[in-house]
Each structure stands twice: as C-alpha cells, then as structure tokens.
Length: 461
Image (cartoon, rainbow, N blue to C red; front, side):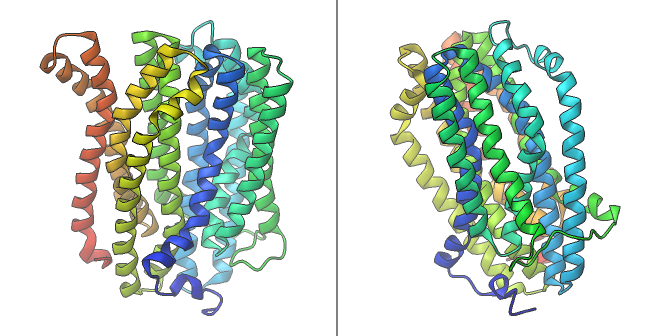
C-alpha cells in the first residue's frame, strides 16, 4: 500500500511540487472558463444587455457550485487523512458515501431552483430588459446543476486519488465541447438574436458539464488504477458532518464571493446602468481566472498535506507549507503584472466596439488587479486548514475575509474616497474598485496571524 501511495509521501522540490499541482490548476482553470467563453460569444453576438444578464444570473449558479466545492474539498481532506492512516477500504467507503449524498443534494437543489428562479431573479433586482435572457439561460442550466457540482467534486478527488492528470483530460474534453458548442450555437445558429445566443451558450455549457461531471464518476465506478473506487458506501452520517465542516470555508468563500458579486452588480447597475454591470462582468471574469488558478493550486496540494498530516510526517509537512507559500507569492506577483499589461486587449474582447464600456473596463481592471497581490495567501490559508481537517479555523478565515472585510470595505472605502479626493461621483466610483484591494490586504494579514498561531499544533513550520 505504501508503494501505491508513494507519490503522496515523496519529498518535493519546488519544481516537482509545481508540476504535481499543475494538472489540477489547469483542470480548475478550464472548468472556470465555461462562463467566460459564454460571455465572449454572448457579448459579441448577443449585445450588452444579454451579456449583462449572464453576469446577473451567474452568481446564483456559482453558489450552487459552492456545494460541490464543499463536498469535494471537505471530503477529500477527510479521505486523504484516512489514506494517510493506511485504511484504503474505509477511504473508498467514505468517498462513495459522500458522493451519493452530494448527488442527492444536487437533485433537490435543481428541483427547488426550477420553481423559484424567477422570484429569485426579481429579488436580485434584475431589470425587465435582462429578465428574459436570465430565465432562458437558467431553464437550460438548472437540469445540469448536479453535473456542475460533480465536476468540482471529482476534481478534488482525482487529485487525492493520485490522478490529477486524468482530471485535466476530462476538463479539456469538457472545455472543447463548450467552445465548439458556443461557436456553433451562438456564433453560427443564433443569427444575432440575443435570446438564441443566451440559450445557445447555456446549451454549450450544459454539454461541457456532461463531460466534466459524469465521465469522472464513470471512471471511479469502473475498475481503475487510482487509489479510489466508487462502490459500496460506508454509511456514516458523521462523515457528512465532518465533510461539510471541513469544506464549509470553501463553501462560504464561493457563496459569499457570489453575494459580493451581486452587491457589485447592484452598485454598478445603480451608478451607470447595464454598461456598469457588463464592465464588472469582464473584471469578474479576470478575477475568476485568478481565483481558479489559486483554487487549483490548493486542491492540488491539499491531498499531500492531508496525507502527510495523517501519516504524521512533520518534515514533509513543513517543507510543503514553506514551498506552497513561496509558489503562491510568485504566482500572485506574476499574475498582477500580466493582467495590468493585458488590460486593454482583455477589455476589448468583451466590449464589442462599445467605447464607453471599454474605458470603464480598462479603468476597473487597472485598479482591481492590484488585489491579486494579496488574494493568493488567504485562499491558501483557508485550504491549508481544510486539509488539516480544521474546518473551524478555515471557516473563520473565509467568513471574515469575504463577508466582514469585503462588505466593510465596499461601504467604507467609497465614502473615504468621496471625502478625501473630492466630493464627486467619480471619487466614489473609483472607491468601489479599490475596496477589494484593501479587503484582500486585511485578509492576508489575518492569514499570517493564523499561520503563526497554529504552527505548534500542526507542526507545519
């Protein structure tokens, strides 16, 4: 058994660690590109209102996806620790039971959303102009929600099962399906009709989810060479509680992130209308790319942390922690520089010739991107404590970061800018963009306090 699990116990150089997590990073990144690809096609073939509608309805489905992330990250931390303890049979039973429970939850959510999506959209303040597009997109995506959740679930467990490369293959196939579907259903067959463009984008995404969510489950259910196999469940509801406790931070990170997007959308809708929502949509897509890469790194390194924690290998744990922080810092700096340099072409890709939209997007990107210097560390900190099976600390980091710091700064910073830099509408507008920078700075400082406070308990430093 130890030979089979040897890749989880080996000593990693910084280069080897990067290569080990790279397939998971790409897999999560490609999975996040669904909505971005949809946005590119819809913005260019459906217009600003249809594109803004996708940005309004998107957070709802990201909240649902957060359930899959919670089961995936929380469950893989639990199963990874069991594998580290040497009990493969119990690990497989736990993996199977968690999967079946999550599928049941996904079906229930789909049924509820099918009957409540319109009043939910109305409560979010969706305008009459955007409502038909939001409804059209939702009616196609809702039946595929369980597959959406399964895709995130399987990405976590393919890394734990020592098959991160296979997760990348599934995601590439799903991404190709989505892109080809968008090109045909939106670019060719929509005929420039915004409603058909939105429906085509939704159908393309659903097709990609079928590949990315169902095929990995078929793999796990079949005889395979990984550490895990889907089969007879170990029926123990305490494991579900433990899974949700472990993954609650990732759930709150995603759900509160979506709620923050709703707040930003509402602010920009109030300040400058549909064009503001569209501009924030582009900035949000860039942020989603960064977040996906950071999340992919955490999902890739977490099984190593969980396994070595379960095996009580403190030397490897210390080494993984030190090199993980270094990689996160490098990635954060490089990403910030690249996005700042590419702000003009990125804005152009979504502006479809609208000069006002393009300028607002460029201004927003140049400010918002500064937050990337600080976003990586809190993401890793939350993932670290999840991997160590400490959902309480992980949850505190996520909740304080996303709900307390984000909401506080989005209220306070625009007001401060308004009074410090002139009582003007423009000062408050830029303050909204800068709020996330200050929020993530506070979250980074908090993360280092938790690193210091728990290093003796877990011996990762």
